[in-house]
Length: 153
Image (tube, rainbow, N blue to C red; front, side, top):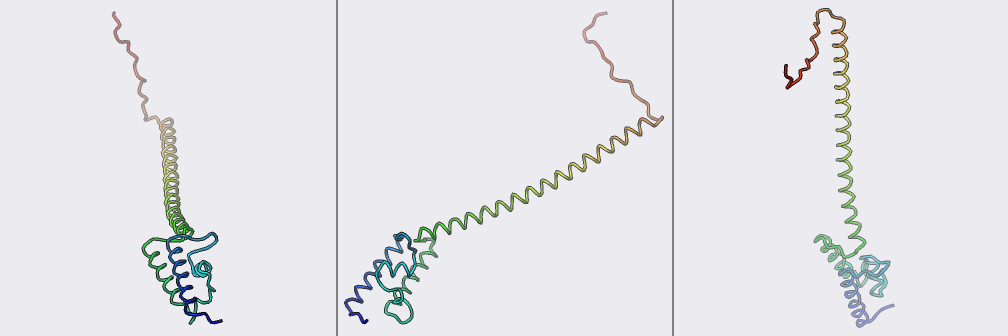
């Protein structure tokens, strides 16, 4: 079915108004910032935006404006903005987790090394004590003297 020039102009005006709303972030419930929602909001068949159909240039303009907004860091669709934010947060948390795991591994290795050194030192002390007990060449020193300070004789 052919539409008149006036109907086409009216449709284009509705499409442009819907395009502006979507790009401002006024996304209807259940919709996205995409051509499907644009067509639904403008009351136009979605197929009219593709191929050699009459509103292909408006779809191209919509996609170009959307891409410019995204490159500027402004994402009109709140769900897409949330997804982008969550992906960034996940990447940061994954990096923090990897760093934490590396720190835990390093500390575990340090602990194992420290325990091994302590065990070796303990074994050396035990061996030296046994050697000292069995050797006749070691002379035992007397214990510390106890003195009374301030006694009068």
